[in-house]
Image 1 (cartoon, rainbow, N blue to C red):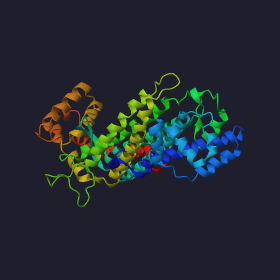
Image 2: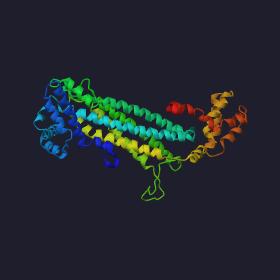
Image 3: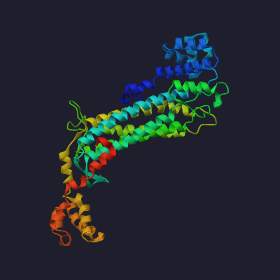
Image 4: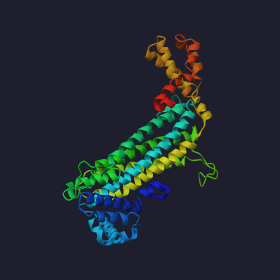
Length: 436
């Protein structure tokens, strides 16, 4: 985790203090469940909770023990015994380290997912507000980066809203995918621990029991989780790149907010660069990069190995912290985005009406001209305009083959900008529902 791209709430989930607190809760809940079924004394379980509930686990002390034991869970249990006393011998009865590690990781991922879902909710609110603000603001739609036909800026944002609604659903599904608990002992057979303990711990930790674990929770669950994060990051990048293109000097239809005192370049004082969206493009690459090792973690040896462990210690914090930061940054960009309708109209008019070529084509075919001939006529008049040699409407009106099929007023009707926006309400209702 890099502090520059981190936010406190998400970072806290991955702190050693949080991890050891979760480990304690797993062990204490398991001890309580063991006491309820008569495996350990109830007084011992009560002592574990009484002495451990408000304890401050000494990270440095645990690290020092681990330096000798070379085993993090044993180091923690040793430190816990220093806090709890003799009754600590009843902790971890019949359990294996993976029961603690895997259940803890899933608790952390669930908490991280909750933050990410809230992040998307905030982003959706910002996109929706700006979409309605510019619902009917005309702008040019582009395909291959080239002017195509008119759209509205609100429709651009409506598309982003729909995409992030899908991403929200993906995060909810990813959360459910990893919200499982395994307290099944060595190789997952429950030989030395009752399945009821797992059910109890799962319930207390807000998880569900893993239907069948080996000695670890199956990693296809985590692969799906990190893949979902990668898809969300890709959507962050898609919207970021849209803004970056719109901020180019030759376009300048929208622009990142430039605050008082902000500097764009150490060399050129005039610069206002899309640094935030460029940053998010880079962050998205990193989040996507974590999906592949998560998928490679699926193929563990037999009932377990620990080839996944080092991977998850890195990608768990890094992927969630990075995506949390990127989503929050994107929300700020959308919320403060500077939008220039006059420049949008200027760009719409740049090609002298060529953006209406399809309407002319269709009008000709409806007037009885074959599609091949209609296409030839329209393109013949469009290409000079493309080269800067005239006005499209004037050229069409001067073409005898065109005017043989269409009256001047029919040609002019093809240049009505509002024609392209007659279904904007329908699209908004599809995206935003009743609020549209």
